[in-house]
Image (cartoon, rainbow, N blue to C red):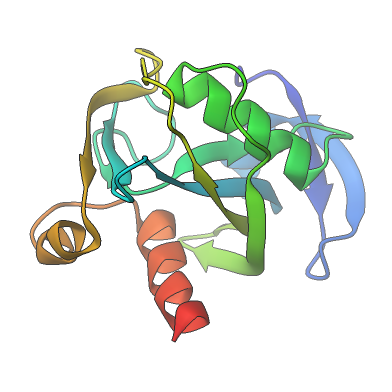
Length: 167
């Protein structure tokens, strides 16, 4: 999704209040929508990656989710499948399963975030403009890196909420 693509602007209840280019939403701190997808492979390992240095939000940080901004008029479910296939470089992924939704707010920014999970048994070829490095880690391996790697703050918050959701 380019910085000039139109996205829905939403209120504190996640109701659409308008539409703006993504660059305007970022610059003005307008609340919008995002999809976060936890991807597991056939061995139940989690796809982990480092974002490219050119990303507008949280460049060069690690993330345990793929995903992104929901387009104007697009549902969370549609965005989750689109974003997962784009970032992983696959076609024919099953529809990600929605788990929960939360409002992420920090540093004058905010977005409603729906967290999903999907199993990808296809060989991945991550999108070079989005993913600088990637691997699959077990839950234990990921847990060992939580305090050592510089993670995207929204992804880290989603990961912590996912742990609470599953407890």
